[in-house]
Each structure stands twice: as C-alpha cells, then as structure tokens.
Image (tube, rainbow, N blue to C red; front, top):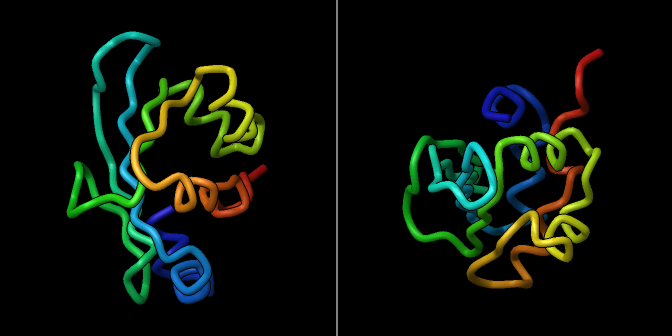
Length: 109
C-alpha cells in the first residue's frame, strides 16, 4: 500500500476522497492481543503508511491477520466483517465507512 501511494495516482487522489486517518490493530487470532499496529493516513497530501499508531485516528479497526488480508484482497466486505464480529471499530463511523476494499491496489496475479 505504501508503494501504491508513493508511485501511483492513488497517492494524490485517495487523500482528497477519503480525508481520514485509520489505525489498524492486527491480532494473530480472535481474542488475542494485537501483535502489531499500523497507520494509514489518507488525510495528508500524498497519503502515508506507518508502523505503529501515529497521530490521532479518525477510526481504529481491530481484527485478525486472516480477516484483514481477506478485506484487503476484496474477499471479505468490511461491513460484513463488522456485522459478523470479525472487525471492531472505534471512533468516527462516518470515516470508518470510507474504508473499503477499493482503497487497496488490485491483487497481483
């Protein structure tokens, strides 16, 4: 995603569309503590990815590694993941609704 933002038009267009900062807390399995956290900043001019929680998030997503991968690959709809309890959201729900699979680059074959 970082390279996608740096070297594609997405880095210029996504921040103007989304205008949100997302934190992701990813756990190895459901109920386990988060093994890592990342920030996707789609508020700044070019958009940025960072390890850890950087700054203040508009929305924080907590999910397992497998579920996060499924969402990023377009195999699991974020709204369905939320309704099934596979993803927890804290913060601004309007900003959270902007987190959709089309934010991510298409999977390579």
